[in-house]
Image (cartoon, rainbow, N blue to C red):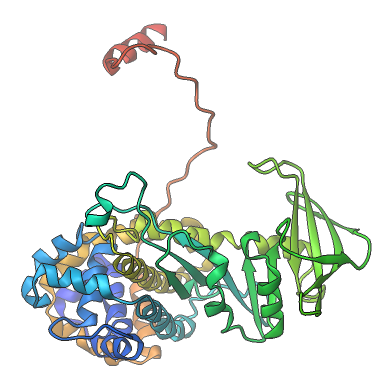
Length: 458
């Protein structure tokens, strides 16, 4: 793929930004997004404002290139083609299933590129595809909508379930719910219905119910889920036996027979980890239920696998702190959920870039040393200037490139990246906070006086 002279300079100085724009041409091609909208939308329709335009504009907001939807609109109102009010009305009507399909579309588009360039991480369970499931509640919004103006409680615009494929590093599926108070378990069917025979689901105890566990087993999938104290009916099928230790405590194993109200039973392994140090909630034991066999995963491996559940917590942290998945000016649930899904799409683009870095610099180096914040900061800080300097014609060919060509191009950009620019900040162990007893009755105190007082002591 030939680059223009100006684009070549950006590739040398800000390779991650060039990589992100090239991937947008592939994963967010306007024709594909508009076709997706027509396939997924139930009641909403297009006239002057296309779905692809909404995705492009919201992408500028969630990536922190612009501070708000209004700011992104003001930067190029002629490209949007409608009034600001019409834009907000459009965002408020984008249906949750359309937003969810956008995430699935991009994940399916990016996965072959990741595999082609060798940017995946080793499988957690050989021969199986691990899927990590968790829920995420969006934070409260501003009270701009008329029904919210006299409400003292924080208005919640919705929540979602997300599925992370840790081998790819991509969020491969989401389910959006407009009711911020709905129980997460109430809408798991939409995700679990896609379970295949070589899937392994990892989730926390909130998803440990008879219905969920039996549904996974009925589709010949596997699971590793922390046991809930009161949501299952079961009988022991043997005594607990010691199976050694792991870094955090002692391990025992026992077979349980779970009972279904319809009369069926399910045999599972229960791995109990007795912790050397209690959790923050004071818990000493953690019970893990799994249908993986001893040959597929030992007790110690099961305990280690459950720790991988925190990978999806890291995704949510990245979506919130590095990107902007919670646009608190969007009070309408559909608009807020659309912004969240566009943030997930942006995360998937970033995960593909990180895969290129892994392929070129090594998995361990990238996972331990590369900061998500600094990579995202380069992209957000350079993007607007790059789009002014580099004409649109230079980006068009990327949309027609195959996975092999794109993989080679991304690896070339990754090879140009100086990882020292994205170095994680290392910090020592946390120190306990001292009690604030001095000047308790004063409203303010001059820092210069305190520093001078401390200097006299030394």
